[in-house]
Length: 222
Image 1 (cartoon, helix red, strand yellow):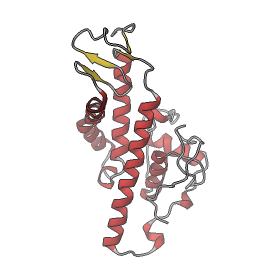
Image 2 (tube, rainbow, N blue to C red):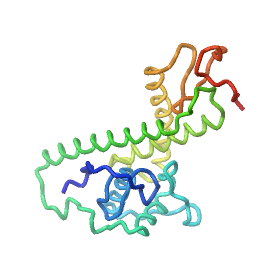
Image 3 (cartoon, rainbow, N blue to C red):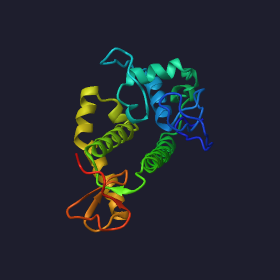
Image 4 (tube, rainbow, N blue to C red):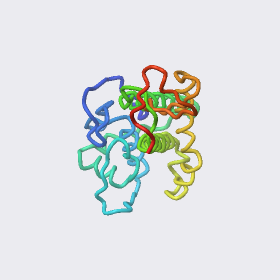
């Protein structure tokens, strides 16, 4: 079994760890791609996480990467099986070039699935009618972007091997780029002249754009 292989089975169940849409039951219970990958890497590394609070952090979709200790403990508590994780040591020696190719292809597939999940999250949280962005909208977009950045970076072994302090430094340097890139893609695809759209369909403008149709001007910036 390829440990990076993504299940093609679709499911209407939710992830028992963070509540997002489950992708497989590879480790015994329904879990999303992000929590599945997190659990596998934690077991393979024999990770020894620590909690900065009281070991009772809430684990949910928007902030599932905030506390690794509480996230992993929830995986164990809900019955995900460490014995189901297949490592290279257990499966025997492999041809190094073939193994590298398989990992690269599987990693790309994992990234594609993660990107699809991200866009689904954006789509599911779209405002019904275009309106100007509020402070709350901007804060939510930052949460999305930095959470996506953490999950994306966690797919790469060099990042995983860094200390928590070093990981925070890396995320602080490039995490904001997820905020810009996601919005840049959306604006290139759907934006109108004179406005800058956020991922949830709200926007900033530099002139009064309310005369255009389908724009709700009832909520002002706060």
